[in-house]
Image 1: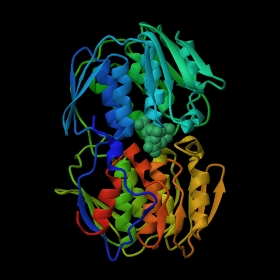
Image 2: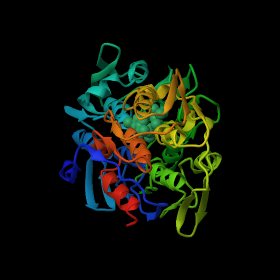
Image 3: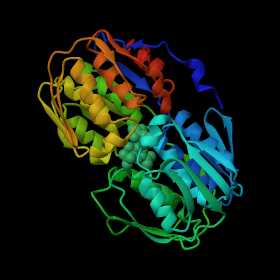
Image 4: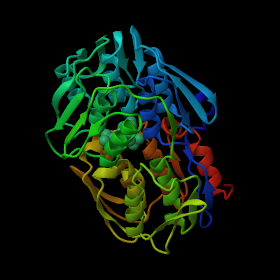
Length: 433
Ligand SMILES: O=C(O)C1=C[C@@H](OP(=O)(O)O)[C@@H](O)[C@H](O)C1
Ligand SMILES: C=C(OP(=O)(O)O)C(=O)O
């Protein structure tokens, strides 16, 4: 695997300012969420699989490393292809989850299926991210786990090679990944699984649909016909070729640049039918004054003359909140972004961090328990702290398009999902992409 730290950009990094409308046609890396699921499903399959155009970034490399530690063979054939050969999962093994929600929620259920002990830990902030409901559910399904107080990281899964499975109740209001993790491993449980969510709504519905869709593509029997209940039948998964779509969430800052500068950005290689919430993005950017079109060249976003504020419940697309908050701070009217209380448990407390950093640059931002109210005001340059959060870095870069002197303390945190972000961003702003 390539060394992602070798290309570290200078720190702090001054976000480039746009001198006119941004015009770009881009090829962006594959979806983090699809790559993570394809890796997990491939490691559980009965034959080899190929991932075409996977995301090569910290989160997915940690996922591959975690699966390798448990015995799976994951190899890089070339820049565009990874090959996964499933093997009996085994401990002893240690999995570094980094700060990846996908790794910390998708691999402990698989570790239950391994023979031997698998330990998990990650970055200091990963220890603060919600994991308890998954630990509780796995225990109820027959897995022996030791966890830190509060059932967070670090944890030790004592795999026996078998998980009984069956029915389980979980409160997944803190993260859809708590459900996805159970479902992705469940075909290997003796009785499969029936997961019932009880609690405030589960966020990120499109990610759960992606889980179900990819499980079915791998041959699993999945019933998601009743809201808040998901059932996976026991059975063998097939190896297959996975075509990974470009990452829509990763593309959003680039699209947002078109809205801010009244330019036009096209994302190449966008599929006709997507597992990602492109219609929702079309509607959100449309409300802000942009236009989203799917054409022969790819998915294109155009700025429409004015950038309007937005009143939206973002619970289904919460990972877009930082980029949309940056747009909101530059809009011609106030915005209310809500329904995203759970992003306080993302890479950092995103609501607190956005409120603090945007306010420090001059915006008028009020934090509510589940969102932000943003009243645009003239902003000034200054330090923008990123809190190890790639999407905070995206938000800062967006403000920097029109506010000179925005300095990111750590743009390298974008390596979580796009190590090439600083280079791609600078090239786009310089008109070289
Ligand atoms: O399953 C996935 O791939 C993801 C689900 C979502 O998590 P939450 O439901 O915790 O928001 C999303 O925010 C995250 O970036 C990726
Ligand atoms: C919330 C995110 O990541 P994770 O998969 O670590 O939860 C994100 O990428 O915005």
